Length: 344
Image (tube, rainbow, N blue to C red):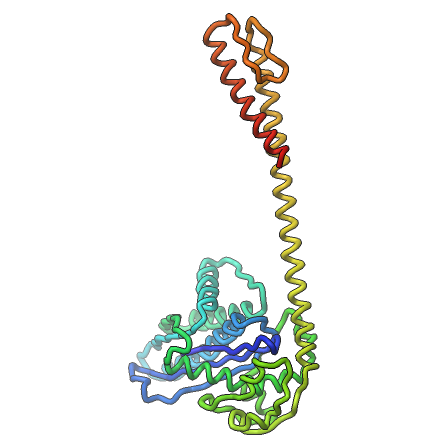
């Protein structure tokens, strides 16, 4: 399985995901097997990393359907225990890191809460697949591997083209929705469903999508869907910059909320630091007072100065003199720390 995603910074909140794979059952080589292509449009993604997470979650959902079908077919064969080995490739190291940490946390029966809805969607697919595997006697081995993007790997290139070709249809589909309702949440729709509603044909991932390139160069969308007839197989409506401005407003609101959360967290850390500093200063002052009391208790020929810093040589016994010198040295260091803290 190969996953990839497409995200255009100037079309805020909109991303697409591509999943492509080949079946290779019972040890038969899959080099001659046909590619199975799936693509999705997602609204509510904030950056390319979230789009990649959506692609990985979609791949796990497709894997769950494949595993279920394979297990049901194998159950009909007497004396057979379903066994599968699955390789899932992604060119997003951020997505793989989050996935590994999530699986590690869930295995320890610890709660895992994502900061955005895409991570929660990925967690739901992980748990759903795990619950199905636990409910059967299937032996399923899944390996997640990183692949360098745009390096000529057939599956990765195909998933990338699939996600790119889906972008015009996803743009047309979600532009008709109320974008203000996607604050802090999102929606994922499969390409076939979007095409059915829009009356378009499913795009061929091997055909480039010119509109997706144009959207990365301009804030507006002056091109009609007729400009991408080879990519989508049909024509569609034209959209101006109003939709993009509305998306940008939603994005700015979400960005402002996150900025406010960071500001509050910073203020809380500053208050905690100040409180800790005050507690340390109070503790040092108490220590100075205690040391002064100990110095006063030592019976010397000369009185201890009020500030506790001057050393007066007296005819006392050497043991008491040494103890007095040690205490006064501690007082000096404590006083220097307090004076230094006052300067700061």
